[in-house]
Length: 201
Image (cartoon, rainbow, N blue to C red; front, side, top):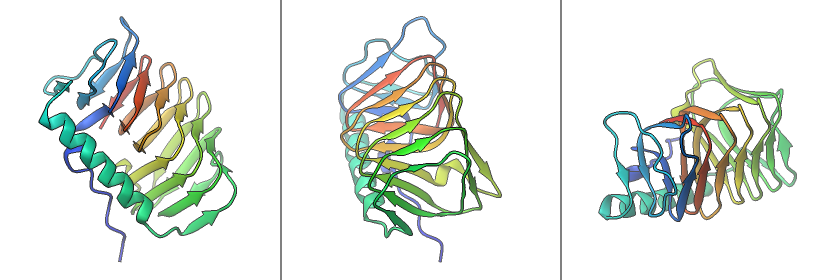
């Protein structure tokens, strides 16, 4: 049977969720299609109509709690690939599965997910994508079933095209200038940094 997806619970409505802070540039082109939540925000990110920015209260606390539940779930799944190394996903095509790496996950160029089902990418290190890199979905793969679970910080390169939900337990997530996640979420128990980014949950 196909693996059940990772349930995000009360975090599911958020495009950007950060337990400590959100740093965003003012006067830029950032647009979040989804709720935003963090107790400290240098500049409130611009949001599409119909969504809310939470800086305190039960909704924010519940979303942050459910993020940790989701991370624990994602980390509990049995690895289909369990590598003692890291990987550069550039130029590769993967089918659904749970991919686990001790080293960093990097992406230079284009990475393709092909086929319907659950994709989980876990690293004991960092998640880093290069400028202009692309995450592509083919053959029925959907961003709603793609989860990135790094232990260390995540950095998406400038003008990169990323997809899926990033689940950061206690490590920061930084998006480079004009990086887009038009099917994805930035969810972290730490800090998020945005710069002219479009994020749509």
